[in-house]
Length: 260
Length: 103
Image 1: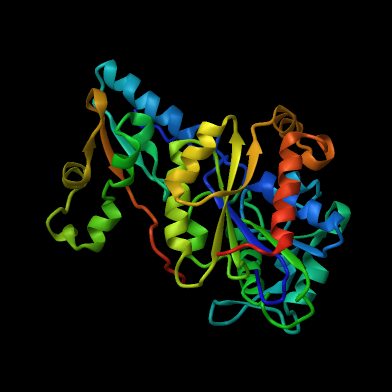
Image 2: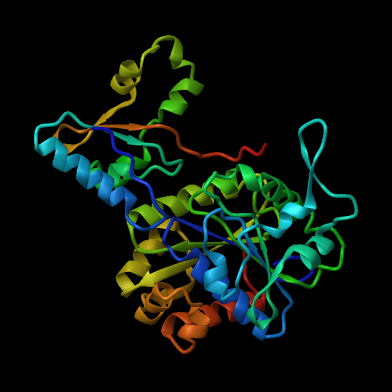
């Protein structure tokens, strides 16, 4: 954990492993327990807002925070630090979670939202500043695969949650992510086995990655159903085994007694 | 025919692409399976094997190693960096991200 004792995690893994489900539900659980929570969505495809139960505007609010200089480089507008960016440009999600989004692909690709993408990158690199965020819990949801970790898109995290389902593709992806994320920052890594349907699968993932599971989230029809309906699992399936497992994940993170 | 398979993570792009490539090859087509994902896994769905897929050398790595001078053509790259998958499918991995490289 960070020296402040605040929870600062980024969630990574293969596509479809359940990153947004874990991130969105974890953020809501922490908020219900009294944390001020910043949820970061750095995926340019839809995801975290649905799992959080938030309504996000199509046009990314962070566009207004960005300014292109004469040199062609994007900057944050004058006076906009991390705290102000969150106050002004995040979306309020249920339970008081603040959701800051990178900006989403449009019909014309990413070009129309490049200002927001750049502003987001700059804001997340300043979240460590002593700017009133010290006690916030931060839960970041990364896009599929290792790319953003290679490009330093989770500088705020002191712990990476590797969400892995018991398939080779998912395990290999987690191993690639773990290798990249180990440098240059010392980031702790924890394994979350998702869509587990038996002890065999869990043991296989643990053995392959050489780490014990911090949480095991079972395959859960109620969560699948919620996602088919576009609802947040914590709203549509509050007592489900998967949501309960993510509550236990929150317990473990809050206990703060994790070893790197 | 030239087909690109796209979609959100986890929906089954690789499963569809790999199985389609094998099916076309069995029907007698010469098939080039191109894995353009920065987290390439197509080899697994083609039947190359998981650890074998993880160990494949990408064209990008080849370029970084300076092989380009010796392989000026696409065919050359397919020959040099391609891997044989079952049913005669030729698999080429475009690039793979495997190190921290900000900026």
